[in-house]
Image (cartoon, rainbow, N blue to C red):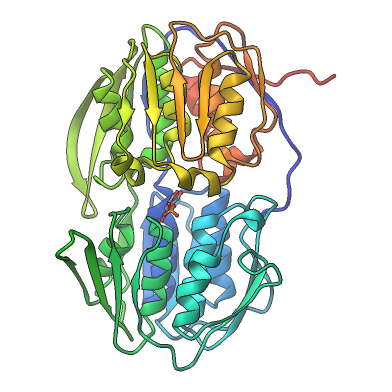
Length: 449
Ligand code: S3P
């Protein structure tokens, strides 16, 4: 949906203590799923607190293309009038999903078990990302996939009118793959089974339960999660409240930690255990973080995260924790740059296939700003120091989290840090700049030439 936008360079400079209270935007994963399950329920689903970032707006457009009515009311609530499982219509145009990997992978799952043809594409980042991980199980369910490049977009999916239930053991720890298969399974006769050796974010399972799908979760003998979903489901519309995104909260949290004297409270943050690995890790590194006002919203735990600036200690981040903080490694690397000693991230090969190759982007960005860093095929070692020289320019490669991470680094480095393009930030956190500036962060648009 979004057109290619002009690059907008942005610079962050060393800022005074950050102070205040902020509320991050709605969780991106839950926002995508709200619109999708709303489209698959018969009747009207309302969504309060939807993330209005480009990625989620691409899902709104995609659901409209499949025939759902998706609108925003003046009070900021969204409404989705769905057509029911099996009721989606064939899109009349190519669905351009912009930068949104989660959106397109889940939407391909939905399209796959409807008897229609749909063509998906995306921006320069998305067309470079692997889609075989979704095409493979969908093919086993009877979907015909036509992609000139094999496992990349653009691709046309032709769903079968006799889709097959499958049992699928996830070959990669990916909530996107799990969710694509479950969403496809909604319109398949019989039981679709996912075996998940390493648990990943569970929003799809939680939300399917809330919408009235028959879904059972058990633990196998080897400890794997086994998810069984009965197909030809009849989903009931819901009133959804989207909690704040922990992956967006990560930026003010780390900024407050590395800017001396800061005291920041990030309110209304989703604390689902499959998403909270960053805060757990920062606390183990010695961060002064307290969770206040813990409560439950729409079946999810949320809390206010209060952070004070202070020195961290390096550590080895356990690979088993990766799925619960997979999007937070870039900003954790920024925190690690100021830690005492080395911080080692292992088992993070999946970072190579995110919006950019995040191992390469993080290593290049840190090195350009005077941080000593080592790159392995599936690991990063950051050698922390009391000071970060800064002064470098960082290539963001259409990656919102790389852009925000290095702006955060620039708030505490000796010299300012420039990113080549802040435009991708709008995919997940359009209010980032204003929100951070409200806490005392200093940004400026560099003069070109
Ligand atoms: C997401 C899952 C993660 C994550 C992405 C959102 C989701 O991807 O990186 O930003 O909403 O399911 P993988 O599950 O492929 O690791």
